[in-house]
Length: 457
Image 1 (spheres, rainbow, N blue to C red):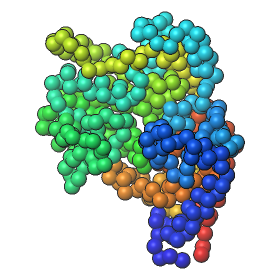
Image 2 (image 1 turned 30 degrees about the vertical axis):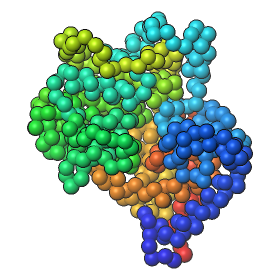
Image 3 (image 1 turned 180 degrees about the vertical axis):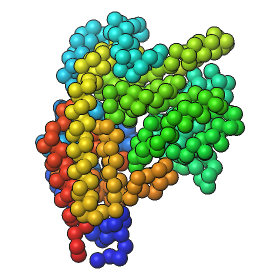
Image 4 (image 1 turned 180 degrees about the horizontal axis):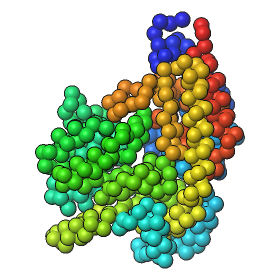
């Protein structure tokens, strides 16, 4: 046996396992391989959007259809889907009320840059679900965050946003900063980056209120932009008192607090903000808020809305730099109404949380059984296994805990055993359509994989 290990796994065993699983995957999908060889060359890098190349399999499957919590490719292989579009389909693929709303609205027009009665109902439902905010509609959470930051800067007259090391807020330029020896730097790896992002952003560590206060004390921060839980790498939970501390510090130093719930809407009805009684000035949520139709929303508290209106009244004539032509289209409103009223319900969240708890406990049992130096984290319907000891405290620790070689092998192994999880990390979501049998199959497959990886030589 090799003396070297990765995440507790002998490297030679990991390499052999990964090779076997890749061969098994490729052998099972000749139709997808043939179709990709024929048609993928029309796309830059062979994929419609570049991040699709980050999936760990030898080649992508081509999806034929998806329904509920199941997905099927053109080779006829069916998978239990726990990725669910990386939260975009958290409520399942094509929830019946949303599919019905799409059919009905399609007969009435797709976009016309004017509101509908459904728009008014969507506003009421957004307030009912998430709290008393003054709403605006965007197409992606990236756009919603970008617009929220523009509002924060207009209100405060300050240039910078404070974000947390390792954060995820879509592709908002200002958020691509990180910490290097305690100093904010433009994150490495950005393509075509020409501006010095440290002029408009400052980075702190999650769960470190002292670092937050040190940054705010300089007086140039317009807003704190944060997820309630760090989610896009290895999940990091907030420590007791952290969010209360952020709220107090933001008020003390005159910065707005923006909560981005795009991934943590899994936390429960109303998202982490409502479940845990957070008090942001601006609230953002996207991805699954309209049942899978590309939609995001951002809302201002009444006081923040008044301050925005005052700033808007003072500006010179011209474009605000906010909004896109296809945002707030009637299809979005039809899907928002259907999702908020019939899909995003207490009963569905109860089902999701019950099965997520079953999944997290089952995965943790397997980790203990095989004595893996790993841990499991859950936030509502979102579960992750992390291939390192825990709990993790901040983005730096989360970055060190990430084990791409191990994760890629496990992800392919799970696909070969009938389960799809998120490609970028070890995230699994429970939808209202997910069944107990699917959860148990995932736990059993995880056990089988760990048996292969950790068995005695």
